[in-house]
Each structure stands twice: as structure tokens, then as C-alpha cells.
Amino acid sequence: MLNLPLFQSPKPIQDSFRSDAEIVLYQGDVNSLLAEIPDKTVSLIITSPPYNLGKDYENRVSIEHYLETQTQVIAQLYRVLSDRGSLCWQVGNFVDNGEVYPLDILYYSIFKKLGLYLRNRIIWRFGHGLHASKRFSGRYETILWFTKSEDYTFNLDSVRIPAKYPGKRHFKGPNRGKPSGNPLGKNPSDVWEIIAQEWEDGFLDIPNVKSNHPEKTSHPCQFPIELVERCVLALTNEKDWVFDPYAGVGSSLIAAVMHNRRAMGSEKETQYVDIARERLFSYFNGTLRNRTIGTPVFVPTGKEKVSQVPDEWKAASQKRLLEKKEEAYR
Ligand SMILES: C[S@@+](CC[C@H](N)C(=O)[O-])C[C@H]1O[C@@H](n2cnc3c(N)ncnc32)[C@H](O)[C@@H]1O
Image 1 (cartoon, rainbow, N blue to C red):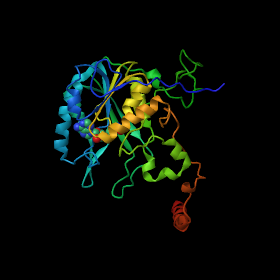
Image 2 (image 1 turned 30 degrees about the horizontal axis):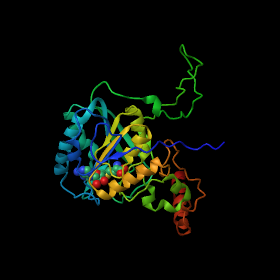
Image 3 (image 1 turned 120 degrees about the horizontal axis):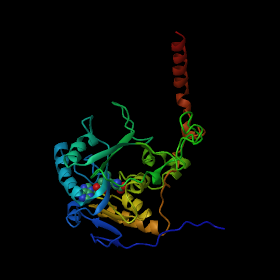
Image 4 (image 1 turned 180 degrees about the horizontal axis):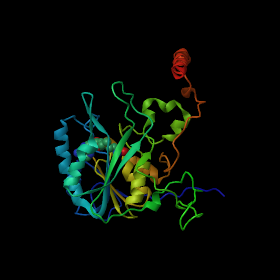
């Protein structure tokens, strides 16, 4: 029998806040949408805010001015967050004249002053990116996960991952001989290896990698749906509101809808809102290109053309190996 995937029936997408809506996709400034949202409505706020990096959609300003503007938005986000709710703030670095400013460290005190509790500083590790020449190449960003109170939603079982050694057993104590792990899998930890946009580095030519990265749109820094899915599953329940104030091409909204949560986002750029709407439609009609949650990261076999040392480099790498050998015998 053919096993066809089941797709949800399409849900209407509202363009402004309505308490009875399933999906709200607002085109405009985050502050205008926030003004419409009642206190304590949202169970999860998850976003990757503008980084002040001078991308197509942002004007570069001083770091002080950037953080001041963000403080005002965050105060409103706090207001709309429910008491058992969570806020996940995904950021990397702001780089000015070669100096690195770790945004999560700069943001931390803004959240702390509001009384939020940090539960994890999650490292999102990805294998590829720009190659730095004056410092080590950056290969991770962080997600600060805060809760509004000490009593919060955390569904660990829904995001457990397969254990490396499920056959391990207790070797002493009252449970001696019994399996020591959890039959549902292990805690995914605070280091998440989820592949980013390797296609931007010219990796499009590797068929396996290409098929691992089906989500790319014209947005310069969208995040993987899979990254949001884990937060949605762990930190909310069905029908809860998930809100991305800087929604881009709608990755968070899609992750929310996929898991039967209500989805809301604001995005100032019309072109990204249009793509977000199209992606939501394609999710409903079964044609959305996305990486399924938990798909293992592609490991090269060494046989791919790009995994092999180019002929032009062989002499140099051979020489380096011989030098290393000699050093070892000295
Ligand atoms: C880092 S991107 C987010 C990308 C998103 N995570 C995705 O997967 O597509 C930040 C987004 O915030 C939007 N943005 C910047 N300032 C905004 C504002 N004041 N109100 C609403 N959106 C804004 C930008 O246009 C940009 O698309």
C-alpha cells in the first residue's frame, strides 16, 4: 500500500492580529503589531533579530543605538509573553572594524533586568561559513532560552534524540543490569548541530549536500525550520501561540503550523512576507521543500570530487606531511 504523507487542511492567514486566528502574518513594523496583542497572549517568542550587520534589510547604526531600540521592543515582547511562556533569542556576533561583539552577552542584561530566567544558552553549531583570515572562522551562533517564570512548559520527551549507546546498563546499585538510558532517547543537550545555509558557500554542486538543504529562499539569513521545530515542540503545547517578531520568510511560522500551534509573525519587508505566505501555502499543499527534523548531518565519504586534495596542492601537502613526520622523530 502506498504510504502518502498527510497534510493539514489549509488555514486562513490573517494580516493583522485576531484572537481567534490560527495564523497571523503582519507586514510592517514589529511595534505596530505588538500594540494590537493583549498581555500574556503568546507561549513562545522565537526570533533571530536584525543583527545590525548592514544586510539588505537594515541600516547599520552604533551598537548602543541598536541595543537601545531592541530594549524597547523586548519590553513589549515581555508584556505579551504568557506566565508559563518562553523566549528564544537567536544571535551571532556584531563585527565592527574586525572586533567581535558577542550579541548574546550584550543582550543578556536586557532580559535579566526584565526578570526573565535563563534556562539554556544553546550553541547552534554549523559546519560551514565564511573563512576568516585574521581570527578563527566562526562556526556557531547561540540561542538564549529564557522563561518568564519558574513554572514553565518543557516537554523534553517530544524532542529526545536517539542515544548513541542505547544498550548501556547500570553496572552497580539497585538497578544493576537494567538499561541505564531512557527508552524514548536522550536529552538533545545544549549543543545543537543543525546545518545552516551551506548553499551560500558554493556547496550547491555537491548533490548530497544540495539535497540536505532544500529550504533556501532569497532571504540573506533565514534560519532552518528544524531549529525552530525543536523549540516549538519542547516549549509549547498544541494550539499555543508562537510569535516571531522578525519573521523574515516565515521559518518560525511554518515550524509552528507543522506542529499544530498558532503562528504569528511581523516582517517589515513586503518581499519576505510574500515568500513567507507562499511557503505556508506550499506547506499546506505538500510541496514545501524542507529538511525533516532529525535528519543526520551529511558526512562526506571522501569519494566526492570536492573532498579530494586538488592535484595542484598535492606536492605542498605531501611536503607538509613529510615535515611533520620528521618533527615527530626528532
Ligand atoms: C535575521 S532576519 C530573520 C530571518 C528569519 N529568521 C527567517 O528564517 O526568515 C531579521 C528580519 O527582521 C526584519 N526586520 C527588521 N526590522 C524590523 C522591524 N522593525 N519590524 C519588523 N521586521 C523587521 C528584516 O527585514 C529581516 O527579514
